[in-house]
Image (spheres, rainbow, N blue to C red):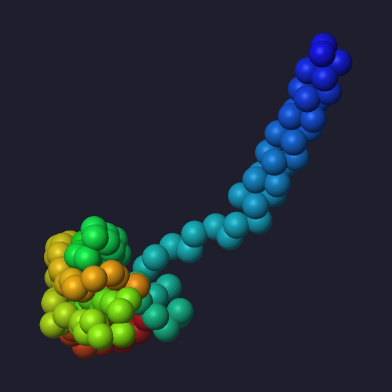
Length: 133
């Protein structure tokens, strides 16, 4: 029994060592975050956009809680696909989520929910590029 414990401890410590090495290699291989200036955004050609949403399914009701940390207004829509063929799928009306704001959108099915997702689109035009950057 004592040999079994020593063998397990040896295997556990080797596994922990290998896992730690793999995690350290992943952290080391990750690129450093770029400085997020207007020039960096213009160079990438894209701007950070899109509210982060958490979709919660409770029985037949679906709620999407969205928070927009970005400087552009995000227009979100909740889409719900119901499981029975006769149950109508739903698409919510568009809801604008302003910068530093949050919104909740709710929809439901009669029986079971098969899937739910949120789509995003810009509600306002992209800001013009600054001259000289």
